[in-house]
Image 1 (cartoon, helix red, strand yellow):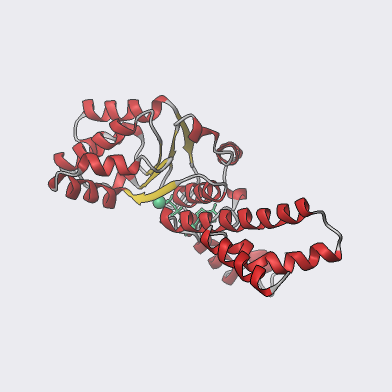
Image 2: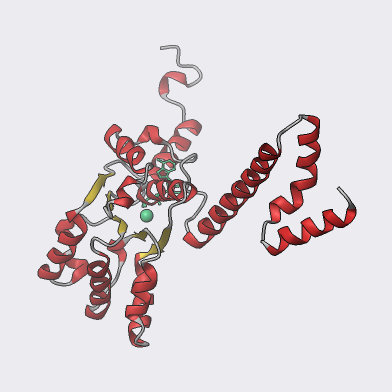
Length: 264
Ligand code: ADP
Ligand code: MG
């Protein structure tokens, strides 16, 4: 290929925004010659490299936009300490089918049981498989909704949130609401009902959601919408931090049978 043709090809690929093909066409052409590929196979190889690179870039962008804490990943999630049923539920969520059905996921359990980590791990895998998830903290989300309402842009904000297939609300129970805060949260949940998934973690069982929504009618209405199509995960395991602290203590403090001078 002449220098002019090469330059023209590079320019054309740049104009078409095919950066990977532009960077690779010469190297792949050498490989094609060495391995006697047909023209079509050569083109296929370049197209596949371009697609692969774009997919990877898109996932990186979406991971960043998701605001998920990436260290809470599936790899770092210790499944052995979770009940079998929970492990099965989490594994089933990885397929992302529940997002297609606009189902919600509600994770309950005491503080430190691993609710946030487990749901972040699932969410991160979903983003990696091409789904869109946004992580928010309950308290912060409510403040943002309130600010939006004050500026008369609450409908716009709720509409913007529909671009995410799953809205992850971490720690719904910690939200310290007055009536106005409860109302914007309820509006969001009502608007999202059957339009997009909501993923929630909470230390508060449903029986205590009156504390969140201030009155039993609103709490019942919110629960009704969330639960209607949902997967409920009960993480009834002790605090991970507490267990870890106990284990560490156990190492520095061996059981009586292993203490020096004890031959019994
Ligand atoms: P919760 O949201 O239930 O209060 P977190 O998910 O924040 O609990 O977990 C508390 C800490 O323990 C975090 O640092 C988390 O990474 C860790 N942790 C909890 N469960 C597990 C687990 N099964 N495997 C690995 N780390 C865990
Ligand atoms: Mg948490």
